[in-house]
Image (tube, rainbow, N blue to C red):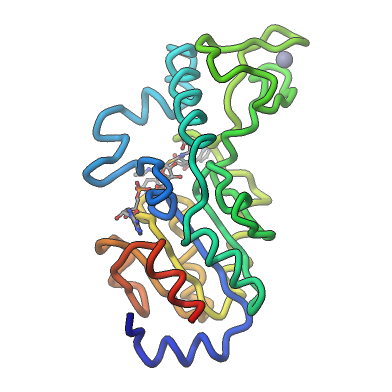
Length: 240
Ligand code: BV8
Ligand code: ZN
């Protein structure tokens, strides 16, 4: 793969690099994306499954859907894209800012990660906020579990539509992006806010914005360089 010269020069002088990632980076591991031809939202309604109202209306259905996704995530592995990002820590100060809840960046070995939309391996009681990790429930448990302390419903610790992002994760991710020399935007449709502000903030603060995606997105016209290709194929090339 031939990269453009300006990009190669930027890489040579860069110290701080941010990877802003979305569902597309995990697609090659076998986790379905949300939008696009095979996206989850083509079959299911986000307001029914990924909102607090949806959960209150049908907690068992929402719990079962997350159990289904946990099952997929447990049985897949990080792909060459995740591993390349982790390996780049040998050469740069790398920060990962991810919208994914799948833990694959951590499993690939990345050490500095901001999770904007939470993590599917954690759960908490909607009543008293006691945290429960995944091992406390069997993967076959289809009905929503209840809290040992207060009997409240237990939900996954992910950010649903209409909910605030964890402030420390958003601010940490945005600050890292603003201070970066290069901000890679990998495998995201860039339509979910406020997460999608982060690459914009990076560019406004002077970072060089590089998009890696199999197709053009809302961010493409804004990027300094768009590389069209699969994350698991493009990212390892950057190591060369
Ligand atoms: C909030 C977690 C406010 C759980 C998710 C401004 C304008 C318009 C609307 C809004 C706005 N601000 C807020 C909103 C509303 C809403 C929103 O953004 N709506 C959009 C959709 C119109 N936002 C919210 O509700 C947010 N909260 O605003 O709170 C508030 C204010 C006051 C008081 C209280 C509250 C919260 C949003 C969080 C939603 N959570 N998920 C879960 O996963 O179950 S959303 C979901 O989308 C995903 O989980 C993911 O995190 C997120 C982004 O998706 P992507 O990662 O980009 O995935 P997608 O499938 O779209 O794209 C995949 C891409 O990969 C494609 O481009 C494809 O081409 C590419 N690709 C595929 N294969 C590959 C590849 N690329 C490279 N290689 C490959 N192999
Ligand atoms: Zn409780």
